[in-house]
Image (tube, rainbow, N blue to C red; front, side, top):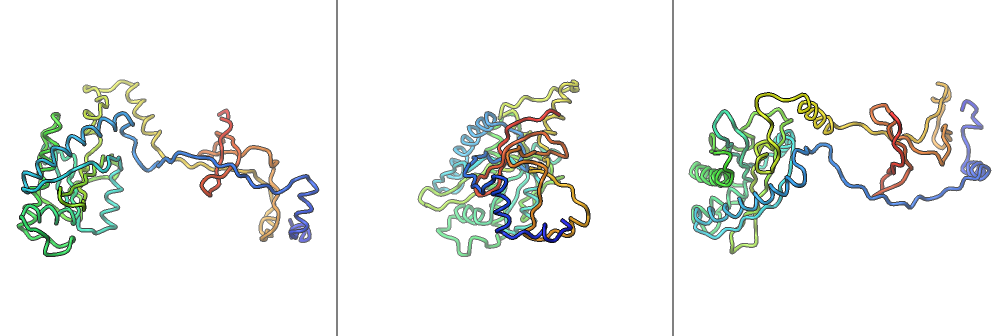
Length: 320
């Protein structure tokens, strides 16, 4: 690379060089479909357990619709939009970055054992309070500031969520704790706690417009409903501890590097590199790509592309 005439090959010279070694530019049209996996999301519940939770939340939504109908003297339709799992730091970040005027009400068996919050967006709060007051329509926009009377009514609405959840869940006697707060979660969190977010779609029977409200509950609180095996009290066996450690390790993110090859250069050669220079690697074009995980080569594969991005199809598990 210290030789300028060798380093700065023209495009024509490059084509001649490639032709001389029998290599022609080809386009890899292989499309590899990959399943998306977000390492930042917890996996506390598996698909079977989430199905049980889905059945429970649908029952909760149906009862909630009846309670709203009785409370507001207007027919309500409540359905489940989604049930998802998250780490607490996601909620803390969203609240910190997006001041949307959401309202929160903590709940649990008592003040010292809080296990979740009711989350009511400003638009939903305005709709429900308006219905509860019997007004045909709100006199202000959807993000208006609630009066003290309206906040007390919103507290009643929040306790309706809590009471419905408690009535459907025999293992816990939930109650609302504290008062309605705005723009902050009324829980002290470290950020690593696992939450289940149950999102409800709410609308009156004579309206096409709907709004949302959410229940944010510690995942472990819902273990009995999901059919997740309870931990044995009175201590844990060595196997239990080992399995717990393995489960946590499997959730940890790791760095994966795809390496086509490498080259050894002198410092002079490295600093003399320029655009359009050719750097020959130590592997042939038909040799596999190495996948390196935390400094160790664990897999081999072949280069491909998927959804407009580079990809690697794993072909071999390396001996470790």
